[in-house]
Length: 148
Picture 1 (cartoon, helix red, strand yellow):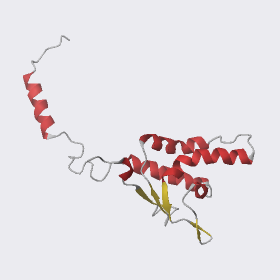
Picture 2 (cartoon, helix red, strand yellow; picture 1 turned 135 degrees about the vertical axis):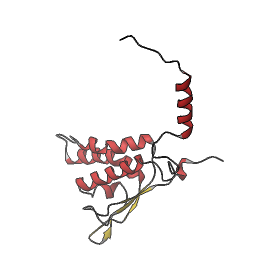
Picture 3 (cartoon, helix red, strand yellow; picture 1 turned 180 degrees about the vertical axis):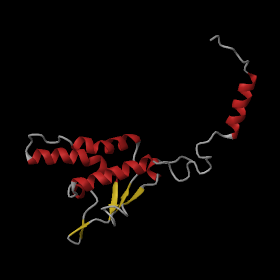
């Protein structure tokens, strides 16, 4: 049975204890390439639109934010009591610091191993099998003296 990439679990970003306390953002999973595109959002915002008209700047900004909008599934964000859509237009309503925090939280969450990964790990220690193999190799090597 094949595993479809579209069935991979997304991630819920929780900003409890931060200046965005109460905001919850649900993101779809993305590929490594998609994650790199999203991580580049902040970099691509720097110097964006130098000398450009507001209309051209808006067009450029929309293009930069498209990878993030593609993985934005939902959020509980409102403005004036009305829900802000979880899409490209909604992203354009965010403040720059808020956008940066969402991007950073998503990239950090995607870079973490899954809950199941490493659950039987010895916290990075050398496995008993590797220790046995290393001991066997070291005991079979002749000692050499290096002239000093």
